[in-house]
Image (cartoon, rainbow, N blue to C red; front, top):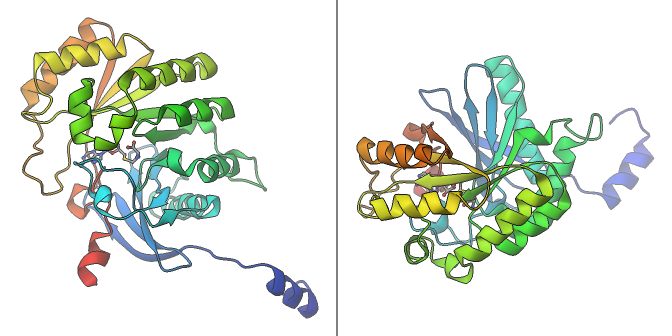
Amino acid sequence: MTSISKELREELSRHFVIQPITLEEHQKSNDGTIKNAVKLFDGNVVESVLIPTDSRTTACVSSQVGCSLDCKFCATSRLKRMRNLTAAEIVDQVSLIDQQSKRDFNHPLSNIVYMGMGEPLLNFNNVVDSVKKITTPHPNGLGMSPRRITVSTSGIPKMIEKLADENLRVGLALSLHSAIEEKRNKIMPFSEKFPLEDILDSLRYWYDKTGSRITIEYIIWKDINDTKEDMNALVRFCQRVPVKVNLIEYNSIGDPEFQQAPPEITDAYIAALERHNIIVNVRRSRGKDIDAACGQLANKNKLTVN
Ligand code: SAH
């Protein structure tokens, strides 16, 4: 900042630090998806992903370095949770992807999902502050609409209610994967502390407060949740609070226990849900070839280099 005096610059640098993220590496998928390895001021690295479609660009951002949860099917759970990201580090990931989108796709970033590394609701204050910064009008914020932001959680009831109280007008997604308690506890062991009844109560609270339908994220695995009983349990869950279901394609992380169920099973799920007028979409995976897809973020390149 050469427009201010040298004395003032020195004074500023005595009192403030600027710790921007740096782009350590980026990889481009053959479907256009870009995965960024982002280096933080203390040397930690997180990943964020730019997902392009014809008309829009979605940013998938990380909220923590590593993750403290233990979802058996997710690569990030294999990394130790080192620390929470600051609000600025989250906003910086968004700005970086906005620049990449303008440069490579000629339009700005349009949507943001908090679905990268970490559990956003376990870094509550910084995640909320980052949303506020992103949605504050220019020049103090990025001026984006909260309607284009989705916060995804593995399901921590108290924090879902707390987020509802913030009145941010963002969307909420819940990673459910099984509506049968014992099964869910097996694949997401931390959830033993959070019974499905409590999660349902918190979703109801969310809906009453915000009027916004919750997205249910659900992967269908062979021999894990591929029976009629699983489908019926999901239908019953979805009948108790306004939701829409996203069936997510499973991205392998090398564990043979988890295999995507065959298409007939997905079709049976869709039929069961639609029979009860529940909205359901199938989400195609993006960026798989560069390990940039859901559940594959694990600083892989970094780990093999070390
Ligand atoms: N902790 C948050 C956000 C990060 S995970 C959450 O759990 O919602 C983002 C989404 O990717 C979640 O729905 C998660 O269940 C899903 N996911 C995790 N591992 C996956 C994998 N291997 N294949 C496909 N989706 C996966």
